[in-house]
Length: 59
Image (cartoon, rainbow, N blue to C red):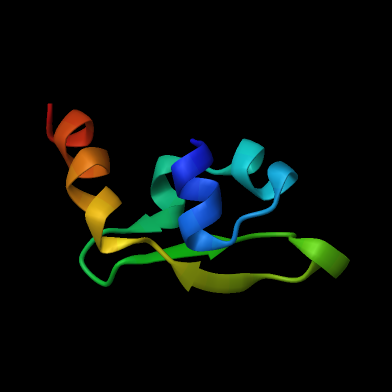
């Protein structure tokens, strides 16, 4: 989780609110809803973490 927060620039509350459907593994992006200033934004999903996230989701 710390590596995800650091690599993607997520703030603590953004990380805690993160859900699977916020991840776009094909594009390597994370959609952040209601971030700082109650704004939505896109941030990067670090490529070295993509496979680690994909494996448990694929079952």
